Amino acid sequence: LTRTVVSRASAIVVGSELLSGKVAEANVHALAKMLRALGIRLEEVLVLPDDTERVAAAVRAHSDAHDVVFTSGGVGPTHDDVTLEAVGLAFGVPVHRDPELVRLLTSAYPDRLEQASRMALVPMGAVLHSTEDIRWPTVVMRNVWVLPGVPEIFRMKLDVVRRFLVGPRPIFSREVYTRLDEVDVKDLLDAVVRQHPSVEVGSYPKWFDPSYKTKVTLDSADEAALEAACEALLAGLPAGEPQRVG
Amino acid sequence: LTRTVVSRASAIVVGSELLSGKVAEANVHALAKMLRALGIRLEEVLVLPDDTERVAAAVRAHSDAHDVVFTSGGVGPTHDDVTLEAVGLAFGVPVHRDPELVRLLTSAYPDRLEQASRMALVPMGAVLHSTEDIRWPTVVMRNVWVLPGVPEIFRMKLDVVRRFLVGPRPIFSREVYTRLDEVDVKDLLDAVVRQHPSVEVGSYPKWFDPSYKTKVTLDSADEAALEAACEALLAGLPAGEPQRVG
Image 1 (cartoon, each protein chain N blue to C red):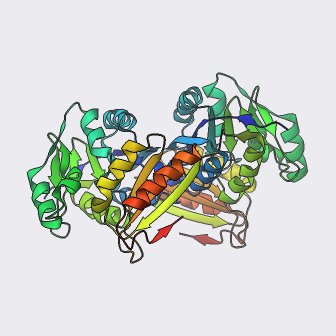
Image 2: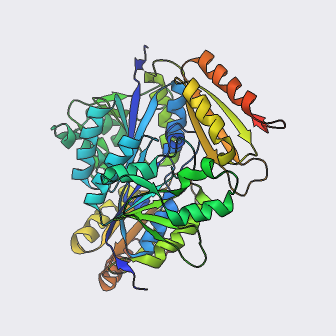
């Protein structure tokens, strides 16, 4: 199986319960970490309520703007599960009952097929991906992967994503922890940023933590440039710093 | 102090570290819960990288589409802290050093004022809100509240938001937990949704939990309608259910 190479991803999280504060969002971080490990850049995340038209408009816009889009949530059997209809609407196609999904539902819910039937709906033209371990297929419509909202199931589905997609090249990362305040490393960071333009430098203050005050991150697809930037950063820190390098 | 009444909110979370999976987002849930308690509807959340132009475009669009916008992150002293410049750019105004913030920074960083100076930048025309407890002011530009990304500080700032904003009316909520599968409550939910149009009904499956399989939520600004919908739901459940009502 050859994996498709994609560079730029986005995520659309569908769930009124997240916006009303009833449930804390629990899938984006796992998705972001996996994409990072694959060398795929997650460019934005949008959280929307269970509103078919708004989700459809966002799916269409994200599908045009990114190589691949992941949706999370809104794929169950009840009235508030609108994602698959929204994906169909985004691309101007109706949803229909997929025969393979109907077969799986019939064996799972032999006497309640009517009530379960929304779970068989997929946009016309969608592809179903499954792996040996994960029998319930994952719906992919053009470049849009439709993933479930239940965190345990979402994580299982990431294994399917990993089987089919990969980034153009790995991204390398280093982390440097110091007890210096951000204000005290600012001039050094500015110099590293200026001298190593292919390296992305981040600076994150930590409050109320005795072990460090600032974490500096360095990221690049160019491993030699990354090491040079990291060395320049370490050489510029005063004696006794850094506290830790990762 | 009279609080401003706002109905519809959005949030823009600024942080490349969230999209690269290095850090898990930790502010949206607290914001969502607080807005819910105030009766303000959080309509969408967007997570963007530290990119001035993209943040500016989103701030402008969200400011037009919602009554109030909250940003989280990107307000420190280093090169990757772009939010205040982006908010200025969104409204076509430059940033300048606010005299009050310069005074506070001078006392906090007497010998490193130059390095700290980005923290004094605010868009021209912005208002600074502070409370007795929280001396560092919160920048508000038109309907955009600029909040910090550090979770402990973000939570402190929510007290400032609460002091100045309130929703048009409270939103009432009930929760019903059942061991029935979503498929088995679907017909009942459809009936409740149809008969109680002013009540928003959500259905959330729980996997791998022995105490319940489906949580049903009911929300409305009309408390009597909410209670009627909740009674209809409870009356429709079989003997032995619900497991719990909240």
